Length: 122
Image (cartoon, rainbow, N blue to C red; front, side, top):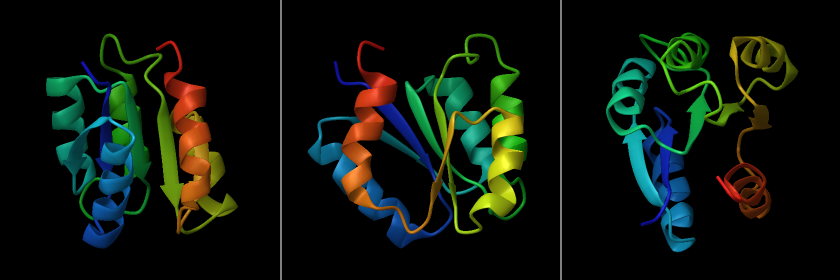
Protein backbone atom coordinates (compact mmCIF):
# COMPACT_ATOMS: atom_id res chain seq x y z
CA UNK A 1 0.00 0.00 0.00
CA UNK A 2 1.38 3.40 -0.96
CA UNK A 3 1.94 6.19 1.51
CA UNK A 4 -0.64 8.98 1.50
CA UNK A 5 0.19 12.66 1.18
CA UNK A 6 -2.25 15.51 1.84
CA UNK A 7 -1.84 18.59 -0.36
CA UNK A 8 -3.43 21.70 1.13
CA UNK A 9 -3.46 24.44 -1.51
CA UNK A 10 -6.21 26.83 -2.54
CA UNK A 11 -4.73 27.49 -6.00
CA UNK A 12 -5.98 24.66 -8.22
CA UNK A 13 -3.17 24.74 -10.81
CA UNK A 14 -0.49 24.37 -8.12
CA UNK A 15 -2.45 21.61 -6.41
CA UNK A 16 -2.93 19.67 -9.65
CA UNK A 17 0.74 19.96 -10.63
CA UNK A 18 1.91 18.72 -7.24
CA UNK A 19 -0.68 15.92 -7.29
CA UNK A 20 0.54 14.73 -10.70
CA UNK A 21 4.16 14.67 -9.53
CA UNK A 22 3.35 12.78 -6.33
CA UNK A 23 1.23 10.23 -8.16
CA UNK A 24 4.04 9.76 -10.67
CA UNK A 25 6.26 8.80 -7.70
CA UNK A 26 3.62 6.28 -6.59
CA UNK A 27 2.07 8.10 -3.63
CA UNK A 28 -1.61 8.27 -2.79
CA UNK A 29 -2.80 11.89 -2.77
CA UNK A 30 -5.53 13.65 -0.83
CA UNK A 31 -6.46 17.26 -1.55
CA UNK A 32 -7.82 20.11 0.54
CA UNK A 33 -8.53 23.65 -0.67
CA UNK A 34 -8.42 25.39 2.72
CA UNK A 35 -7.36 24.90 6.30
CA UNK A 36 -10.78 23.78 7.50
CA UNK A 37 -10.87 20.99 4.90
CA UNK A 38 -7.25 20.10 5.73
CA UNK A 39 -8.13 19.59 9.39
CA UNK A 40 -11.03 17.29 8.45
CA UNK A 41 -8.98 15.32 5.89
CA UNK A 42 -6.05 14.89 8.28
CA UNK A 43 -8.29 13.66 11.09
CA UNK A 44 -10.17 11.25 8.82
CA UNK A 45 -7.31 9.85 6.71
CA UNK A 46 -4.15 10.36 8.82
CA UNK A 47 -1.73 11.03 5.91
CA UNK A 48 1.97 10.22 6.27
CA UNK A 49 2.98 13.74 5.10
CA UNK A 50 1.21 17.09 4.63
CA UNK A 51 2.13 19.92 2.25
CA UNK A 52 0.44 22.99 3.78
CA UNK A 53 -0.08 26.30 1.96
CA UNK A 54 0.07 29.09 4.52
CA UNK A 55 -2.05 31.79 2.85
CA UNK A 56 -5.59 30.48 2.39
CA UNK A 57 -9.09 31.87 2.91
CA UNK A 58 -11.13 31.09 6.03
CA UNK A 59 -8.64 28.97 8.01
CA UNK A 60 -5.00 29.64 7.08
CA UNK A 61 -2.17 27.13 7.11
CA UNK A 62 -0.76 28.31 10.45
CA UNK A 63 -4.06 27.72 12.24
CA UNK A 64 -4.63 24.40 10.45
CA UNK A 65 -1.13 23.21 11.40
CA UNK A 66 -1.66 24.09 15.06
CA UNK A 67 -5.00 22.28 15.07
CA UNK A 68 -3.63 19.17 13.34
CA UNK A 69 -0.65 19.05 15.72
CA UNK A 70 -3.09 18.98 18.66
CA UNK A 71 -4.64 15.68 17.48
CA UNK A 72 -3.50 12.39 18.98
CA UNK A 73 -0.98 10.68 16.73
CA UNK A 74 0.04 13.76 14.74
CA UNK A 75 3.07 14.89 16.76
CA UNK A 76 5.48 13.28 14.29
CA UNK A 77 3.54 13.64 11.03
CA UNK A 78 5.74 15.79 8.77
CA UNK A 79 4.11 19.07 7.74
CA UNK A 80 5.90 21.08 5.05
CA UNK A 81 4.76 24.68 4.72
CA UNK A 82 4.40 26.24 1.28
CA UNK A 83 4.59 30.03 1.14
CA UNK A 84 4.96 32.79 -1.41
CA UNK A 85 6.01 35.15 1.40
CA UNK A 86 9.39 33.61 2.24
CA UNK A 87 10.85 34.36 5.65
CA UNK A 88 7.94 36.62 6.57
CA UNK A 89 5.68 33.65 7.42
CA UNK A 90 8.36 30.96 7.63
CA UNK A 91 9.24 31.62 11.27
CA UNK A 92 5.56 31.66 12.19
CA UNK A 93 5.05 28.34 10.36
CA UNK A 94 7.92 26.68 12.23
CA UNK A 95 6.56 27.93 15.56
CA UNK A 96 3.13 26.47 14.63
CA UNK A 97 4.69 23.05 14.15
CA UNK A 98 5.78 22.83 10.51
CA UNK A 99 8.91 20.76 9.92
CA UNK A 100 10.15 22.75 6.95
CA UNK A 101 9.22 25.83 4.90
CA UNK A 102 9.40 25.82 1.10
CA UNK A 103 9.04 28.94 -1.03
CA UNK A 104 6.48 29.01 -3.82
CA UNK A 105 6.53 28.44 -6.65
CA UNK A 106 7.96 25.09 -5.64
CA UNK A 107 11.07 23.84 -7.40
CA UNK A 108 10.01 20.30 -8.29
CA UNK A 109 13.65 19.19 -8.37
CA UNK A 110 13.45 19.48 -4.56
CA UNK A 111 10.38 17.28 -4.29
CA UNK A 112 12.03 13.85 -4.44
CA UNK A 113 14.71 14.71 -1.82
CA UNK A 114 11.96 16.06 0.49
CA UNK A 115 9.95 12.88 0.10
CA UNK A 116 13.03 10.78 0.84
CA UNK A 117 13.86 12.88 3.89
CA UNK A 118 10.42 12.70 5.47
CA UNK A 119 9.03 9.38 4.26
CA UNK A 120 12.06 7.12 4.05
CA UNK A 121 11.36 4.40 6.58
CA UNK A 122 8.23 6.17 7.78
